[in-house]
Image: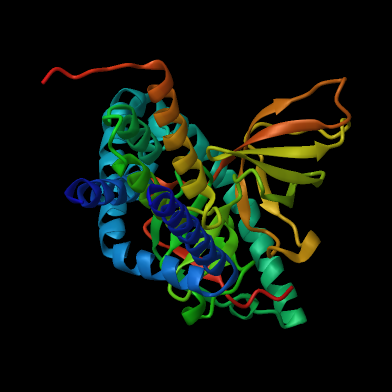
Length: 100
Length: 271
């Protein structure tokens, strides 16, 4: 729960910073959406058993939908689907066993 | 027993997904969505305005640092430009007197032309050429109202209104095109199309028309979307090709966010 709340705050701040602060710098026009990068990295480095990546993807999607121009659900579906795909790929092709 | 539990869990998951779906439908098809967005903007606007101003300041500072070398060159160019403008000013003064006489004769006052509302920019969409301003339907703004800078340069038009905020689609947005013209000895009428990333092209210009670099592109009253005579930008480069049915030109937009502290919305433009 703590991880979800902290991630939600980070996502909110990333959206605000990218739309209000970084928008001024011309050399950053091609900067990818930081929230999407954050969510993808979070899902990539999450352990296979954890499901918080999915919840965080849904929250990030909701916040992006609220702040950007697309209708509600657009980014939520994209990010949740991306999260599911990452998890499926990791489950199928990566067999990581962390030493105890 | 385990099958029963498994089925119950499945039903719970399906019901949860249906509930989420219903919430998203309600957000999109009722006023709930606009209220949610408005509340979020309202809560974030102090931080957004602070960050917008800080970004503007830092960007200004970086530009100053970059510009020291080019300053000398710019100075000499400006001196030449100044001489040219002085000559133009003399012509314009003559025209102004003539214009004032005509206005008196026709009883037209500029102050009667449009009523404006001032607003602050709070954010810009990172993926599209859209901005959010801190005035909305509670301030009398409606979809389609033109948005200009204090120097009467067109920025765009209002695309979506919330009670306290509005979303403005910039002239450089890919979904924005408008009728425009170049004034000169011969008037050239065409269409400006947004290309994203603050780039605009001037399209549908007949081959026989000669465009000069630096010419001013202004709005026309065709289409009745914008008042005529608002500055869009200056011609940056011309793309002439015999293969294409029309020639196109790149426009350098005249608005610059780093110098924009506030903008104006024309609230009573008569279509």
